[in-house]
Image (cartoon, rainbow, N blue to C red; front, side, top):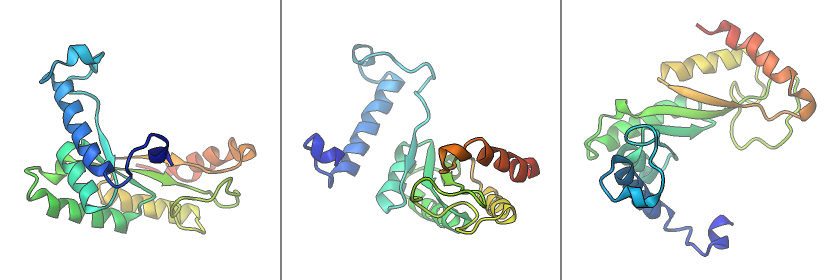
Length: 176
């Protein structure tokens, strides 16, 4: 829908992303006439770039241009698969895949809370999550070297005070 709105081809989005990332990284390093293009980032070299996607092209893009690979709704098994693919793709990318931080957006629907929307992926701890299943999966993600995660609680407005409280008490309190 966004592509149609601006008259752009959906099919060429990856190639355009590669080109845009190459150009913006050059600007941030000061390799081009960046001063005429606007304000430079405060961080030397620019802000960290997180690149998502599990296709071969997306993983190669993350290795070429990214500071982090970002997955949505991944579990420990999927994270391990992505790390294996990154290791394989890194051979031709002249990049140590260990320097690419794996991150994730995770969906958590605490037990007994109704979902406000259809989840776009598998929830943390499974479809019938318990505190134990969430803590177990969180541990497997940590074993897979997940460096950071954002947690989305897709609950109703009425549940907003209670769902984070459950997460803090049942999940975070047990963190090391």
